[in-house]
Length: 321
Image (cartoon, rainbow, N blue to C red):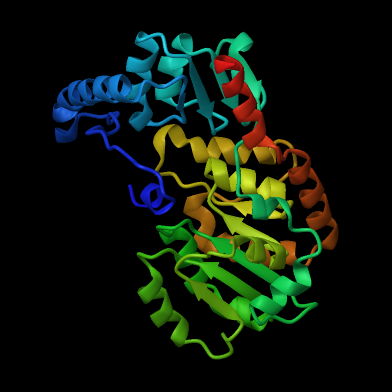
């Protein structure tokens, strides 16, 4: 609700939330939310008169796609994860095309509707070649020293931040340069904790990273959650990656995303519950293993879909041409 208007586009919100998989007070209001959202979606479709609708999964896209397909408006779904979400599975029979980011998604969707396109990512991440020295200079880092990046998402990730604060001395002793994106909720707290360490001048703490291309270009190894778009970006960047899937997401889809990479020998997985003890040790081992870094980089890049946005647009245009 913030980012879309900032980008110059109108946004209309619906009163809807996810259905909890256990008995909660929130679930008592769920039927009323659905009815309200369906009613508002009818007005949106009537007023806007779309030629095509696109749903990107999640409960927010459900009511609008339901109404649009009922009105015979052509529809495309985009499934970002390796395990299909409930909303997309429910809508799959009603839409004309389903754009996916992982192979073998016909186990969830009708095979004739599936197009393997990948997930769209920012253009600057596609163009990292030759930027490493510029990127190191941008962060005030030295060439030739190992550089680690930790990505906790815009809101941050408690497990990743704890893993860092509990093991900062190991990174300082190993003379590792660090780009640490801790999230806005944790920034002040992590700043305070960082002050207690001598020699931490090469551990750079960020609430949010705007120049992601510079960060990716500088990094030798990346630690990240395993959200669908993070996995897609890291594949295109071709970075040796340690995924720490968040356990607090629907259907544990981040673990499934990470395992899809691990099964192709394209990444390392550290479980959330084991990260505080193991994560930084794994990162230091990987930083010092040139052969493993090279293998992981090649294999994760082989899974990249750098032209995903254009391919999805092609599928949309086919429906309205």
